[in-house]
Length: 317
Image 1 (cartoon, helix red, strand yellow):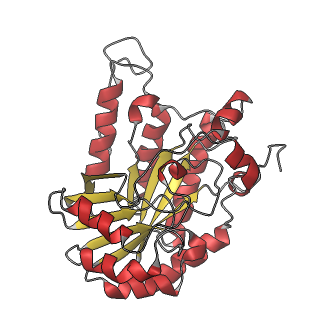
Image 2 (cartoon, one colour; image 1 turned 90 degrees about the vertical axis):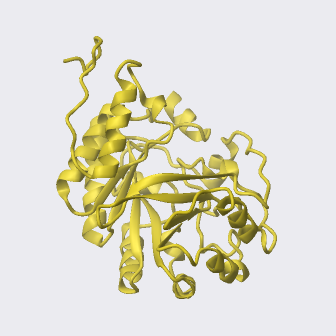
């Protein structure tokens, strides 16, 4: 392996800035946004960012812990959060219950609340939750059986790079991931993969290459949808790695290249995560238009003509 550092849970925790205050009876955010569905239609999806106990896996690059609690939330808190959000959102046919970790972590989402949660999402055609591959078992099937709509599980693959994946401290192998995908697909549960663009230790070119390798591997394993996420600083340890020259966020051009190449695969839906995309702008003149192009490519699943900058940046015509 290359002479890259590895970090323990304790070292990752020690590098963190303070977590943000949250209310266990309220989701820390909720919204609706359009998403291309498997049949090609674009429909609104309600996304609820639930407040619960932090994930037990201390991933090197993760910053989702910032909106979590240190203790398991009270019984009834998660259903109350769902009630709060759905009462304030317009009706949709699809819902994401994202909880900054793993839906089937018993200390995050109390299993005693699963029935009440399922009751609240009975009107949705699709219910999407996030989970760790090692937590995909019978509890997933029991929750699936409570739903009227189809269950989809989103899992972080991150990267298939053989030296980087172990250093992300995800406590997962590619065999674990493939086993989880096979289990879910065998039980008619849809799967989407989260893939990092330029995780720590990789150059810009390597980041592009390994994101595409990871996307291809995910489709080969049976994943039906890939979401490419640009690795963002902000969790403490990534800043430390950046100071050592071992991490740098990807460029917007790399996100464009990966989405274009991913769509050319025609293996399944491919999205790029555009949250906070402004931080990747290198030119204020063409950055917003390039973001809008990526957004439209997410929705249409087609490659659109590139944006030409009217200024003097690298995208100038």
